[in-house]
Length: 152
Image 1: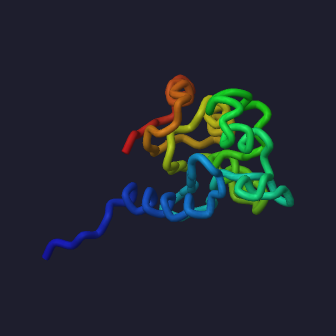
Image 2 (image 1 turned 180 degrees about the horizontal axis):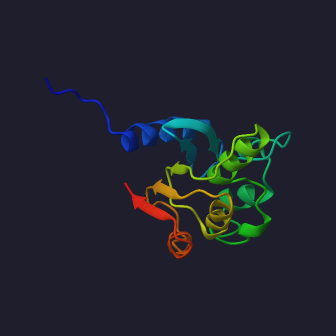
C-alpha cells in the first residue's frame, strides 16, 4: 500500500516553511532549520534582534525607507538591523548549546554571501534550499567550501 509520506528533505523543507511564518520582514519571509541525525536542533526566521521593534512596527529604519520607496531594494543592506533566518538558526543553536558541526541546514531561500560564510564556519556540511534571494554568490561560496548544496 503506497502512502503520501514525504521524504526527509520534503519533511524538513515543510518545517522550514512553517518556521518562516514567524518572520516579520515587510518584504520577504524566510525560515531555516538545522538538522542533525534526522532531528531538528534549531530553527530561525528573519527579523529584528531581541528587544528591537519588529519591521512591521518600524524597528528597522532601512526597511521603512525601502517600503516608502526612498531607496531601492538592495541599497544600504549593511544598515539593515534584521538578522537572516540562517543566522538566527545558528545563533539559537549556539545559545542553547547544540553543535551544528556535521549538520544540514534547510532554508526557504538560498543563503546570501554573508550567511554562507557563517554556515561554512559553523561546520554545516549540507544546505538544502530554494533559489529566492538575489545574492547567488552564497551558493558558489558554499560549494567552494566543500558544502553540499541542493536546490529543491
